[in-house]
Image 1 (cartoon, helix red, strand yellow):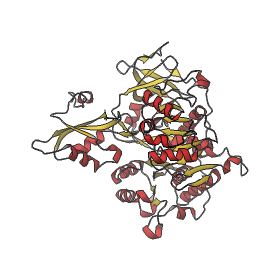
Image 2: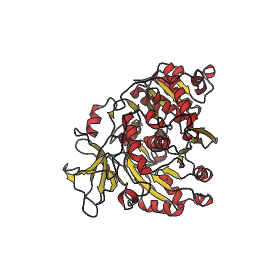
Image 3: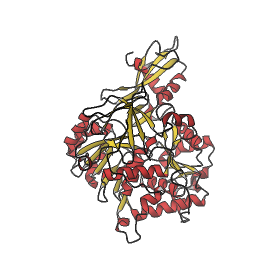
Image 4: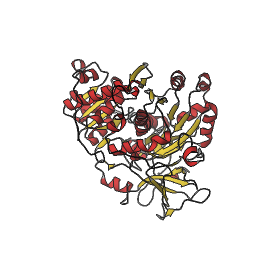
Length: 538
């Protein structure tokens, strides 16, 4: 039996992301235009809404002048910055599709995404230019199609920079497309299993998800939002960047996480809202640095990207004297499907959502929990918690599918439009959802997805390794980390440190194997499938 969102329906306009976020300005006299939209915390540089929108339009004009528009994919490889925000929305404003790339990727990872997405341009920053240039060379992108936003310019290294793109001040193009089908963003996700796949998110998907979450956030123009979660990740892209801009709030942007800077920015800029992942919650609950900063401006901390332990959440709330809530989603859902409102549910639901839950189904959507063994719907209880089953979801924020992968799409979205999340969940009598475990085999390390199959392929390329399997295990702090179970080749001399170093040399830092255990054989089923549950007892 399905259960619908308990929140009021919201209007989802038929509009592009740009029009939805920025057409609400009434004109040059709109006071919100002169509000500060973006603050680069590293430099203190501030950008008003007026300046940001002008730069977005000029950036879009520059891309159009180079022949880019509807049907083209542009790669964006950069850490958080005001330049990222302008480039991302400039790509969408030009009618092109942005494939955002993890800033921690190796050249090989970048090249793989550029190839699969068929990107015709790559935009990056000087700090990431070496791996970007190597990737561009691997896929055959000409130097002129690798833009280094803060680079020395075309004359110096062959790559145009932002100033050169914008100097012509070309007007933003007039573009026409159907928001319901035209792709705005193409992030990559491993989905329920396997290697990364392009998640096709339309303009309607992104507009819908902002519309679904905005009333529940209750964000207002006077809010100051700390933006440390990466914009290249769908969590940062929708929940931070797009939702905050739609609210006309101020974003204090951090290019990467550093606890001292995180706390210092909250104190200096009087941040009212912080979006985090659970590893940050551990530091906020335990680190002595917290006591050295005035964090009294903070009203709400929202956790996502991985389940937050209720006791940890309560410890953060008590220490910071603010509300802590969490939500749930995935790239394939744009990403938010379940949310605890910033008031914990008091206004709409007349109760506080338990901190151990991810809240309620977002507006204009419906969920159900299905027994993975029988396929039968699990009925929400009249009291207490339901039985555990797989969480399914249906709504306007469900992706259009996986790029060029109909098989993976069909295995994730059924004929009735239900997206099968691969996560095991329960629901209580109030409709709050609780994430229990995962059917899928992905490891979530600090909020990043780590597919075991990818690490296993790397391990098996080592001449001294006969077989290998990878699962997620808790470390001493209770955080999930990748652990490799390795079968040595006969006569091979191999240490744990050597295995860790070998994998680290071939993958992004967050994908590294953190623990190694040598075993005699990898447990497998008759069909050859790795029995990962058996590994936990190995």
